[in-house]
Image 1 (cartoon, chains in turn purple, orange):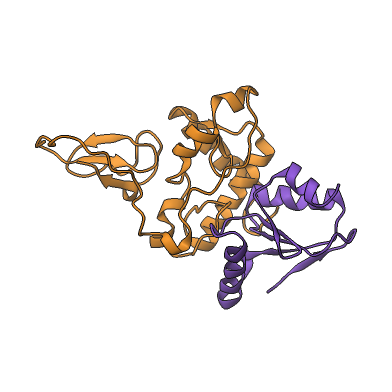
Image 2 (spheres, each protein chain N blue to C red):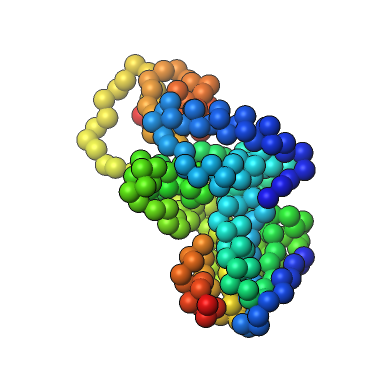
Length: 93
Length: 171
């Protein structure tokens, strides 16, 4: 899966599943940059075929509604939607 | 966010057009015009890549038969406006939010997950007494609930401007 990496403080594995056209996904990405953590993100709408199917399956594993943004921290903590307070608390900022 | 092939003049033109249509129908656009224009940019990007204005905040399949419910304005806008004061994207918001008396908060996804789509009934069935026989069928706009009694639904909903295919037979 095509994943972009953003450098920052190491707070564990932080993965953001997003859509390139989504306003809340964009706000979530900007919040992570502002907090300054290292994270990876993928624009699932820009993936093709099998790669996109696999990404959707991963999102659904953490968030059965399959919605975006889905933020996964250390493969266990899942935050769906732009929930600023919750994201800040989870990343200790 | 910038997308190739979506010009700023297109974004501005569609922004003004949709805002006017919304207000004419009694709906309100999010007053944060920068945020709103980003969503319009997403809508135009989706129109370019899928052929229709799929919701920018949801993943479209690219198959119009599967995405009919998420063509903007989506089938979920009005219930989300009633319950949360904003549609899923917060393109459309309540009067309270426009006035600054309430804040936009994340709206949970109301669209059924992929595994349930097409199985769960889209509308709750209300049991009534025997329905009288009308001389014409009654059509319901799935987006705004507008009802009309005529042989065929209108080409464009006079309230929310969605196309004929968004109507269902109601009675």
